[in-house]
Length: 291
Image 1 (tube, rainbow, N blue to C red):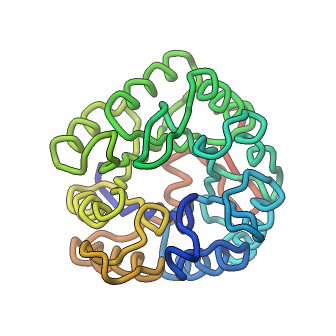
Image 2 (image 1 turned 60 degrees about the vertical axis):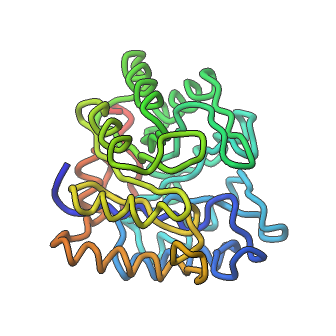
Image 3 (image 1 turned 30 degrees about the horizontal axis):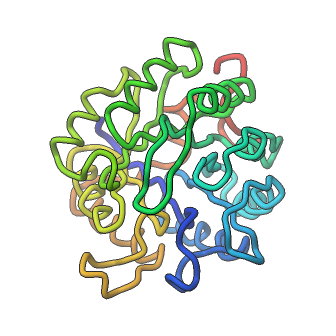
């Protein structure tokens, strides 16, 4: 994959809270403001996690997602918006898929789809075959495109299984996440195998977990891929963990690396065309008749 650089911005995630870093956006207002800055600097898409405004904990509630998306689309009506369907905290289908039910101006373009169960260092993410199938089917019916999250090569193979079942249709967007303790490690060999195994018609970005974020982002920029970047995956600016990063810090560094590698940032409009998404400005997701 070559061409303009996809920046997949992940401002919040499920884990960081204010006691860990004052820079993580957790309120609706803070999340919108960090995305506003990112949009003005230059990003391609945003991967949203909603937080309960009172407790800072993750929430699946579609009314909170709705408030965030409404705020985003006031200044960025073409920005590609992906909502999290994570299984780390909630594992009932009705909860995990609730945000997919937003419609009209609030409809997400994409929803995250982790392609297997896995362990993080302190918590598990449960993604049973039935859950994965049901989430993929609901997205297909609603014209919402899966953001395919693969932490190792086996998850890519499972995506190919879903393709055979007719649950995924091209083009495909993969976040390849490397460096998690129980999955593919953040090195060239693991990364190359995962790229090799991608199905035809795939667009991909690298994410690095924790202090592997900069390394994997740098490799992706150098070899023609996209990047996933933000406080969701890494709260530190330096590998020695002496400087807490802000989302602004992490994004500005990506822009410096992109410029040094002569890579322009892919606009949301270009990404929409590549992914057969509707054009934004009130039309979101993918046409159901072609999904």
